Amino acid sequence: MPEGDTIFRAATTLHRVLAGKEVTRFESVYPALTRVADDRPIVGRTIESVSAHGKHLLMAFSGDLILRTHMRMNGSWHIYPAGARWQRPAHEMRVLVGTREAVAVGFNVPVAELLTARALARHRQLRALGPDLLSGAGASRSGEPFDRLEVIRRLRTWRSDTIGDALLNQRVVAGIGNVFKSEILFVARIDPFAPVSSLSDAELDRLVAVARELLAANVMSRSQTLSPAIGRRTTRSLDPREKLWVYGRDGRRCRRCGAPIHSKKAGLDARLTYWCPACQPPHPQ
Ligand SMILES: [Zn+2]
Image 1 (cartoon, rainbow, N blue to C red):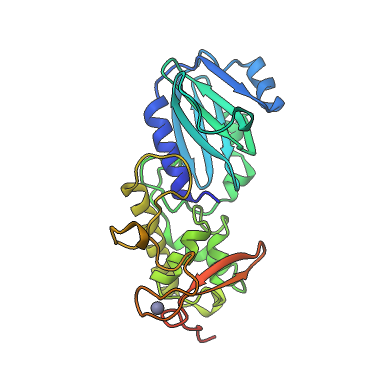
Image 2: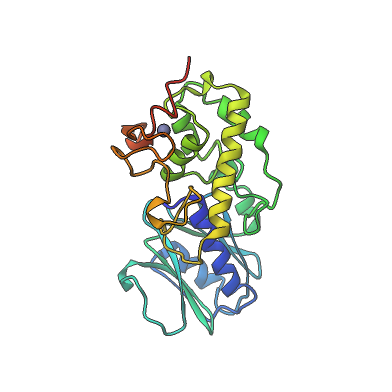
């Protein structure tokens, strides 16, 4: 699943290439989009901005129309020079926005709609999103300072959930996927299976600080590729084989203490959690 930093980088790159440019081509396989575009043509409008909000990517056009897309598990945005060969088959194209110089293609993007700014402000899913971990970092939609206390307040409302599940809940905080979940908990030395209610405010505060640090570091340090899961790193190592602390490393030695890393399927979607039982011992309840 694309994580907040992936969407954020996609938005940053699309914004850099497309902002201020006139749309010369708009296509979609979704009738709901083409119907709106028939009534209120996208071609001829200027792309004003591309921004990320959690896992939503928002492309704003002049004349009060916004394209909202959500990547879910497999969606991605690519950008190509006009006329260049795509890296994905054409039948995976769901929505396409072209300018004279470039073409942005949303491949397998399962959610796409055109909205006015007013409708967007009332949007149920966007309103329900917790604070964006990357807010205040440029391409974030909100542009508001990050509200750490609000995240802790939201975490507390899911007190019987494990902290691992609560971190994945986009209504608590927007932007964390399964890779970062395991990495954040390792760096903060917190047992992924501890119920939220067993953690102190100080522990939650440290956890949120670590989460923001790791996501922000990934936004700043990585190249401008748009495909997910390339080069994500949480360790400071420059060796590409040592990019992550625990994710995907079950049975291998902990980079901090040498104990074997464990993994377990847990939570609603039975997603894998990786942790070091020595660095992250069971939390006193
Ligand atoms: Zn360890």
